[in-house]
Image (cartoon, rainbow, N blue to C red; front, side, top):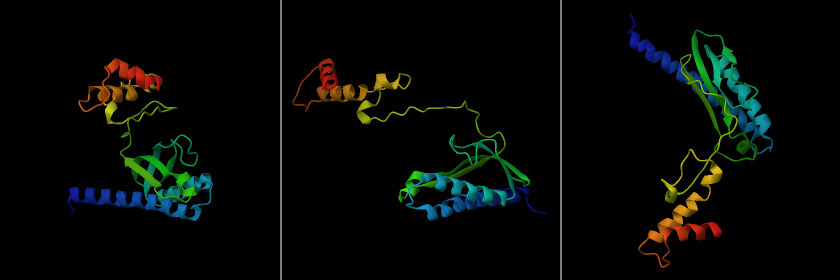
Length: 183
């Protein structure tokens, strides 16, 4: 009789290989579109290739996470008809516009978890991003609107400069912040 833990490891390894085959198929098909200028056919071809590979895999996967604009593998799509059931997070090609422009660094992504394994999050229609250098550490409150946070890194940098013992310009922190905002 086979050791149950060994068969579990074997099943996981097989699942991992099937997922690798799906991402590989999506990535390889994109080579035909390298540098052609239009990202839409890149995305469609990658999605079709990934779907075909997953259909042959012996999995039954329900797409739970996918990019909102992705029409070929949207959330709720059931792929395959095998015995192993999983929930899938799929991005057939992240960087389709990179491929279309002839650049590198695109990626094909698929994640499989037990059914119900992904956290259920509300739909998000817009994401706000803010990037600042190390001088802004502790000065930005992520609960504030971005518009209120835009001048903060400049104030933080000027405050750090004003407090610096090696600074040739000596200003008090409020004056430095005002100077930074007016320039």
